[in-house]
Image (tube, rainbow, N blue to C red; front, side, top):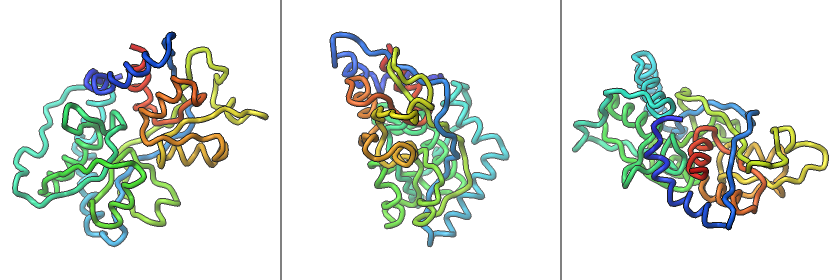
Length: 263
């Protein structure tokens, strides 16, 4: 899907657990029909309008000069580039970005470093603002609170703009588009998204707590059918071990998880 060998290596321990969970390896696949499409943006505290304006201006510049596209293409298509960010950032004021680094290719660990689309986009923004980027890794559902309380300056975690979130936080212009997909085991009776809402359907759905997929699934199918997990890894493990019938998650992380499991 991209040069996610590094991503797959980061997930290989998880994949090994999947294989060890039973005598027969469970092969996963992504349904052809998408569950939802959404735009991703950066969350910033409502009172911090100065930072919001600066981030939007930086995004405009990164879009206009092609940098934003190069960053996305690097992680989605494997396209190489010679972009370097934060080369001379030491000693500058810090720009704290809250994230949940278990969402490849947007944010994930490569060794001890957090990399991905969001991490690199934030670094590019920090350069525009003449600041040093610091990434704060936390649970997804703690990100908005961290930004509201001023512990982090902004949040980037494949985060969708929703009406509920806009009540508590501001969002920048969109910098990427995500698709929510459904992962099932090979041979599953779930062959399309419509099967989840068919009359009498009782399929259990795994999600990452606090994500848009989690919110959508609970709204569409009811809380009693949605099993919430702290990370995408845990949701996928629940699928492999038969605790849920499918997982709803962003398409790019979905591809990484499926590839890691099926190796």
